[in-house]
Amino acid sequence: MPKPIYVLSGPNLNLLGTREPEIYGHQTLDDVRGLCEARAQSLGFEVVFRQSNHEGDLVDWIQEAREAACAVVLNPAAYGHTSIALLDALKMLSIPIVECHLSNPAAREAFRRKTYVSLAATGVVSGFGAASYELAVEAAAGLAR
Ligand code: CA2
Image 1: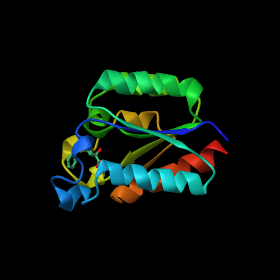
Image 2: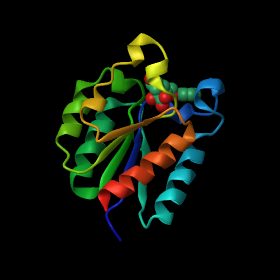
Image 3: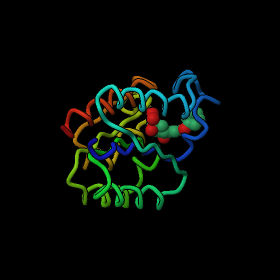
Image 4: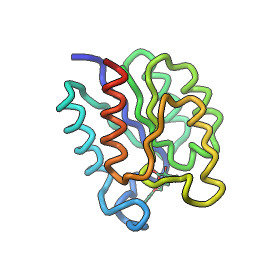
């Protein structure tokens, strides 16, 4: 079995499915976890699925992924638009990084158009709701092979 794909989610995504369903859909983060696990398993991979509202947790997990993961899928949520700390941590990885967003930030407010995380990402999947995570896991698995 290869090393797992780390699937990391940032602030407020623990509340997914409880508000703004027109933007983010009705599925909860637990539903998203199930989709990621199923897609990874079908491709012969496992996922480590985590969410935090704290920037430092995400930095710690990205650092952990240097040794423990074969690829990282990251929905940085709002930290993607603000966090040089996440960007610096991601730059220390030598494994594929797939940035993932439920919505399409490029089609929303101007402040969402800039993402620091994209500067370190191998690729970005945006705008497909929960399916963005599944597509990102599939891309990560393909890159990790
Ligand atoms: O579209 C995405 O996945 C985002 O990363 C979500 C972030 C937003 O700041 C980014 O610009 C795009 C916001 C996550 C908010 O979490 C939610 C909590 C409850 C219901 C829906 C979303």
